[in-house]
Length: 216
Image 1 (cartoon, rainbow, N blue to C red):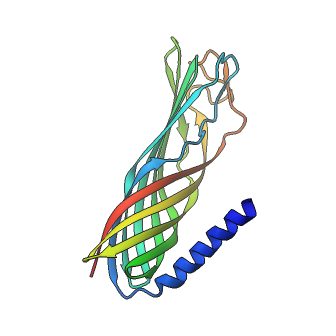
Image 2: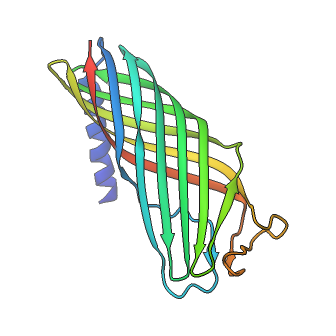
């Protein structure tokens, strides 16, 4: 069954790309994330948690692309907010990423665009709030690396486009505990019940995007 579904998907995209053909239009495209994929971005474990935590993922930001025929440049900024809430501990993470994108497009009335981005900036904040014991901030270093992959489908009519896309962002960075840097793995606010395995952080965020475009 899985093989059959994959064959259908491959055939669909092959037919779609063949139908698109080369683009001769100049396009200006704007997109914004509407759905953040639910993922566990937590790095902390409460050794005395009495119930399974809940997770919340949200995002905002936008992408701007300028395409000259079949090739274009873009800039994307996306802020992902993640909350892990348990019986004792709440971990809040805010990740603001900026990417320079290179995009390629095919098609006129129906179009397909794909490409990749390079991380150009990151703001990363993490907070711990332990019940009745205040809050700690985990500081994240300023030397991250990362990239992004994306694709987009578009429909053109009367000089305007409607767009739907999907984007995945891959980020690597580090953090250190600002309160007790010599005792990695414990947190004062958590009453030394919170631990983590590694200071190296690998994150993958992904968003469903909607947008509009104009053609010239």
